[in-house]
Image 1 (cartoon, rainbow, N blue to C red):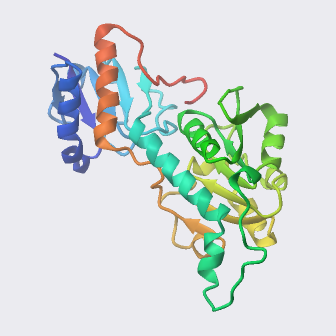
Image 2 (tube, rainbow, N blue to C red):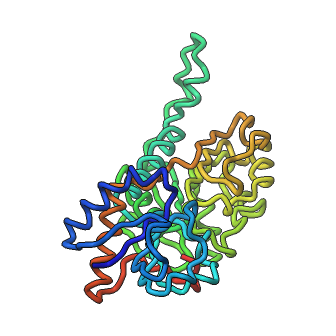
Image 3 (spheres, rainbow, N blue to C red):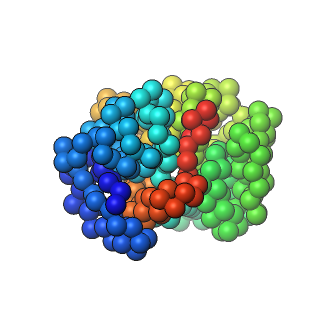
Length: 313
């Protein structure tokens, strides 16, 4: 019977306790679930992990066969020198659907010009020049074609948008023009009337969207960032917004979270801040992913969504 340590914040345990028990039972696994302090570290077989939880030193967990993260992003743990166990990131249907709905909703809001009409409720009938193009006439670029980026690119393509996707390594998605490499990035940005960033947090992606690359966007482009806060040079984006190079931005992630009250994004008329809510881990679907990976480990099968430590994701 494997011992599983729930190493998230204690206040989240009531949300996860029943789903984890149900998912383990459904997977045919008889296991013991414990909280920190209820079991000796050297007796733990699997760690259900959150960066906000109490476990940051993995050295005492000499028996642990895997660290199973509840988060999609692993930048807060991947460089931890005490972590020698296999690390798996969270990829689950609920998280993907939440991200797709956030991206599609905000893309359609900008595409249809909803904010313009909301801001001009003044009795003037403005039809000429304010009828939106069809989706097939609008270029949307998605930077990052992992599980979440690929799902968003496919959803936007299914609505008829002219979708370009970019990733470090070449990908292939039906209905999406997939590019890679530095030349591919320039071409992808040039197509981005709406730009969606879903890149991992790595040294290569830090400030990827700097002044030089923002200048490659079509004038009046819109930026949606539900990926990682490190990918945008904040000063460069603010300057692009002030100049009109970028028409608007909806940002869900930031270099510092919570976003400080004095940050210019809060007061900027062309920025909408959402508080890191685009893709929240949902206990029911996440528990099934955790249970499946434990089942796989117990059966000697490869783990799902294992992190490549060299790549950082």
